Length: 304
Image (tube, rainbow, N blue to C red; front, side):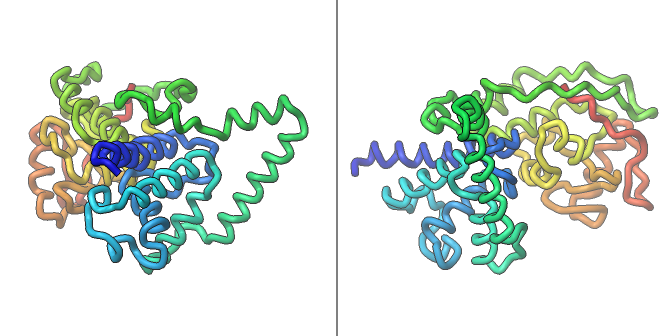
């Protein structure tokens, strides 16, 4: 295979695990009964373990980064499995459970339970097939045109042509000791830096949402996850390495119970960089009770 074709396969594989599947997970696409993973590296793990590792974690078979060391046949197989997950032909829950089992980790969902869910889903599809009208409706809801998804521009996401219904805006809540709230305006230069970066669409969406949090206020991983229709863990993972700090203010994100949360890759008041997070918050007017390890005030959640 020519080098040009190999690079095309590598690009297609990156789109699959880095953009298409995370976008489906974030939007909670009905093609899967559940989305046990949401971020790019987790999708990469699940698929690579199934295709390359098989009986052991994929790192035991090839060197990292996998995208550079896989053969063309392995790349094609990984892309095909990703497409099958995106179309609901393969159960992500079962594949994730097998991957975790290979690594000696606790399974998030037992394969048998996932299989039952898959059979139930297939039964529902069979019932819908009794009438042409229902059959067409079911297919529209549960299938994704992967070829079209691969042709989307980098700024587009899977499902953009069927956006979820907008959520009612939450009433603004602010720290009573904080300065007046801003109008959620993001610095255009910073927005361009984020959207033009090679970060995955999900990480970009997390950073752009965080840019809306005004100085003197704080939000939580849970509040951001609710806005992004994701999970607090996924948001935390996306913020673990913030290439645009401090312009993208990850110090303004705390845990749901208002404890300090993570900063600089470490967690809580005992973290190596906790003092710096406290300093930044206090300079902006947020009250931090170091004795309790928590911030005072209301959690900001007026994302747009």
